[in-house]
Image (cartoon, rainbow, N blue to C red; front, side):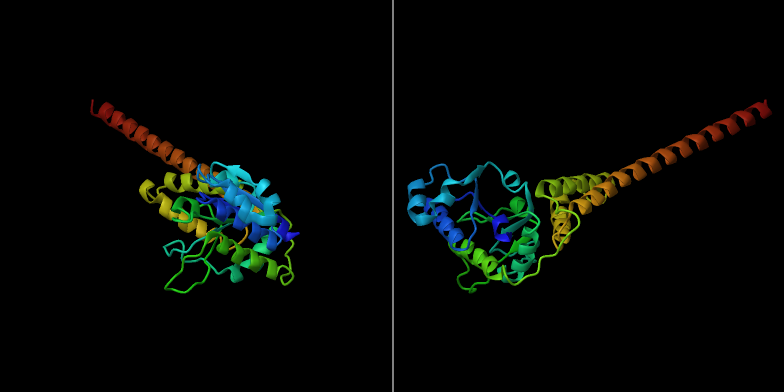
Length: 267
């Protein structure tokens, strides 16, 4: 059941052969759903068919999207693959470390395995959409993997782990990516509103907040609570601002009244 909810997402793929080889790797490991985000317009689909071999049903059933956000909107977890190091890529785990957690999440809904371009990988704004990050351990002298090889490694670890983990039953369904992204947008606007961060540092700060939340699965109830906190904070901030304004106006009125009384007495 869990493997049926694993979705492979390829972003900006350049070569048809890699798409076909990805389909074959998926079929070997019992994973059947492929989504493509803006593949190169001149991609060689004949090469894809040739390399897919007997996995052409996966290739033919592929779905196309114009953005990663749309491609993963129905997923309860979005797993980005990265070979690069960076401030918010440093918490990436190996496929073997992530596999049990991802299979548990896949019991609740769709889990996307996201792979970037052959030459550039995933961009920072695409990484920011990921709830989890995976980095495949390789030799330091040559860390670059072929796209379909990377897909095979992740799919194999999930396949090999499928009978080892014990699924956890959540009372509330896991929140889909679309709902989580709405929550992060609300928090972003709130933190700007209360002056916690500046606009120029917002992307950097939100990447850190996303990293904090990625340490555990977020259910629909969790997200509703976090969005409720945002709404209540807005009310409290605006209510406090209204009270302080009213107090200033009252104090000003009292001062003006005292001044009038003093002028009347002097007259």
